[in-house]
Image (cartoon, rainbow, N blue to C red):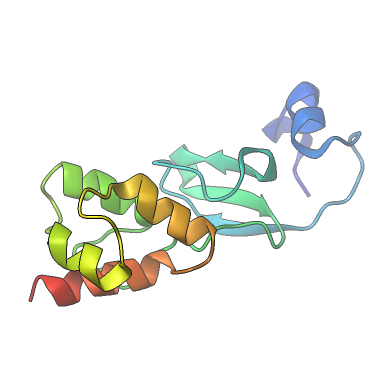
Length: 131
């Protein structure tokens, strides 16, 4: 249930292609605001509250819960790497995941959306590669 004061009618129609009053099942998930947790038409994020509502069964496995450096999802991890707040052995991760040597985070995101790997697994592999 999305309260009426949380989203205007036009946005609701675009997101759900339904009139107000329809019931949709959503998952409430942690949300960093750095990038999408699902396809654009399948979620509504509130970065100021660090939550998103994702249509049930549509979220990408982007969450990270055990990062020693504090990354909360793959998009947050990317921002931390770019800001030199999180170490990364680029070549080691490429080898572990079978990526091209010139891979970028978009390549990782594609693996995650294809459900070949989770963000949690990516972070674990990164930490194994920097030890």
